[in-house]
Length: 504
Image (cartoon, rainbow, N blue to C red; front, side, top):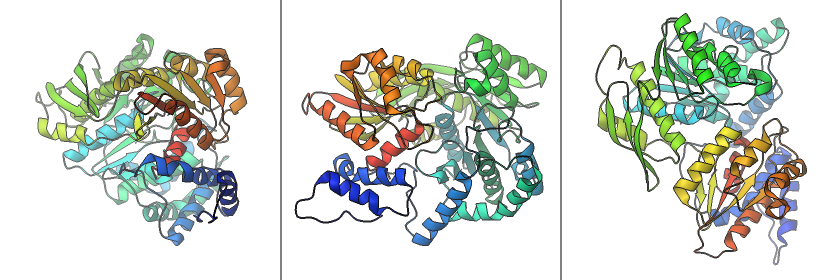
């Protein structure tokens, strides 16, 4: 990235515009984001290690990675779908079905999938298993989506994996009515990378739904269902029951199903599917669950009941009751994978479990990226996620005054999302991220005014300006006021805010 032009008395706005214009070989929206980070990075403090890779330092590798990203971006995006696994199955068939080379844990649900996947990965790794993890969407770098041994694959390996399968992708593109989508190609890359590694177990998060999701060419030994709520209703159904019907497609014959707490009608659908395929069911609140939780410095202290018994004094460095429930689900999934509760009536080694949970991170989920004032990022993007985030930030931080920064996608229940935050946001700054799916700030502001009132709403079309405005509002009460900022609305908004705040 080019350096800031040097002037004796530079105008910050002119310098910003010059820097954006200088980024002629970059995506224009990303150029704006990276340019804006100049003014915010100095305030945010040094970046911390969190498993989010930066751009490759080698210019040649960076160019090659951008070429792969551009090719993938030219395909159908993740929200344009043809509900079928026909194309991905055809591709994996000519690749030799790499997804059959290892056992897998398959995760669906509406909220909490990525955090649960990262916890499962940490637990399995603590027991010396080689893991592959496939999650989506990414926070900052596309390479985050495919992890080996609890770390994103390198840019070089990402490029090599794509190049290995590219000729076969072209073959399937020529044979099918529609080209393989962005998500289908990435899924094939993940399965191929896991087989090449090779891994002992794959932890796979669905992209959307279940039955026709591209990931559903695996037969997971364990099927995990995190809480189901209304989201992607145009694709999955308008009730929890309908959505559960789609998501239940990942439950395969003789698998173990680990069910988080669900709406009654959604749970009924899952249990019916389990009976149909002779799957074993473990239900939160029945066979496993959270026995106790206390807020602790940097997270929370838990006592979990697993399938094999109790696990006391578990420190989880994540905030919110929802993360405690995710931890219970993750523990039960790993126990089920090891046969605990069915083949073995025992607990797993408690010290290993404690160290695994203590090492968990989930970037962009109640993540603190700055102090004084405190800036928290959370990728909530639907009403259920917003309610969980509102409860978590209230419990963990107790801000005297909280300013929200919201950049949402146009296809979401934005009103329901904002209503969940109305009781805790003193003021809200509405903005947009760089995605083509982002809601126009003025449209978002119109809804926000109806929810919050005009005096509590500020509009800043650029995210960097929105962050600065929110920080300024939080600072108005003084250094020791206890005010904070919560940035939310979309994984993309959170990822771009992380970059702006120096987490790159």
